[in-house]
Image (tube, rainbow over all chains, first blue to last red; front, side):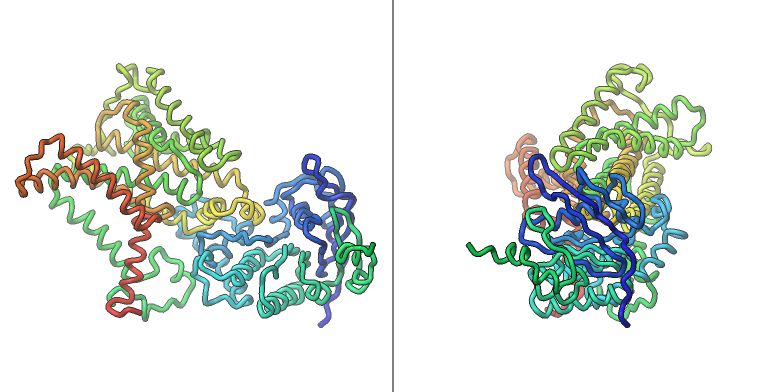
Length: 260
Length: 358
């Protein structure tokens, strides 16, 4: 089944972000359509991670408008982005190291949990029922990512590749409508990359999740993404389907350097 | 060989999520509770109740409170003694000013008062972390003790803020003997420990641990940092407050503000460091270690000196006791920086295989 790409759900207009005198992002506009895989690429320090941080509310741009699902977004906190269905993974794994895989994934569902702490203290009744309900959902994610065998393992004991997968799992556990992936394949070997690609494509295909992806592996980016936006020194220098971007002279210059 | 979960299959998530998933643990805990409730009251003497068991349980409760905050939610605090003081003085005042208030209500209200004060002094945690937060909680330590000394209202105008606690009565029944007080304390501690265990296995506990391990990721997942941290301060202070009330009512009988000094805060902190951060069991083990080891050395050292015929004076013995205590703390921290609870866990993993190497 070929997926159908829907309307624009996230529209970023003229975003500028400064830290003191440092301009991280300058006047960047692009949009993300529903169900698509949108890649953000660019050399180191181009502002890719800052862009993701802007999307999920960790950074607040000084200028520009963000329209998410038809509504202009005011300044907001990261947890609000989570409740709106935006989940993400981090460039340097940001798992909860002292907790097991299962607990990490259960934490991913926290915005969907309704019981309060005094019910938790009592446990019996609503808290337990809710816990079981969410456990079922989490087990589906565990099955999907094929990590059944490490369910009860503390994440700090896992190898890097598996930690990356668990982090994806934690994001998926929230059943997000939009998933932001910050270099999901960094530091992986070919086999692990293939696995990760398959998971990303499956998520996109089976669950219809919109994916915004930062990745350095050009082969992967060109293969799996629907559209690509290219940043360099905080400015947008290219935007379009992979073919277009590949042949864009500005992009080639940014990556390979101009001949002088 | 005996401690092994082989053959114990879980066929539902409910069975997998119970408090003690391994049968031997369940039996062990029930056995321990049965002994504490049914056997100890009939065999232990007065000295055991009032000098060992009651303080052990009370300090376990305080350590448990601090462990929820520091071990689980990752917020370092040096104010536990202050929150205990709030609990002690609040319970005293509730008993004093509300006629015929059942003692359990006083204790609960004392806990709630401490929780309120805890939230107030937890506010700095929204902006600062780690050692800086610890220094900020020192403010609670000094301010509260000063407050209780300065304003005579809190101690009903007694000299230098000393309060003598009222009788411990519940619906007309007076808890007077150490045995009765022990049972009261044991019940309260058991209920609160169970509640703590439930909290940390539910999403409240996961939110705390998430904030502890990686706060940026926690907020991106949808955890609101402010309420999560403040809840940790509130619950922790509630536990410390109840512990303080029990400390005054069931252990000492009369307390003064200076009794809740920084020294006491440090003791509670050492208990969770030695016992194990982020472990309910660790709170109890740590309290036992810090509290009981000096008592044990007190008894054992003079006996040993006498048996070996060494001409040690009492002063020398007490010096040796302090030295030995410090050495043992260092020894345990080097052997296992994650505390006694972790040692116990390692022992259990070994026991699973015993007598086979793999």
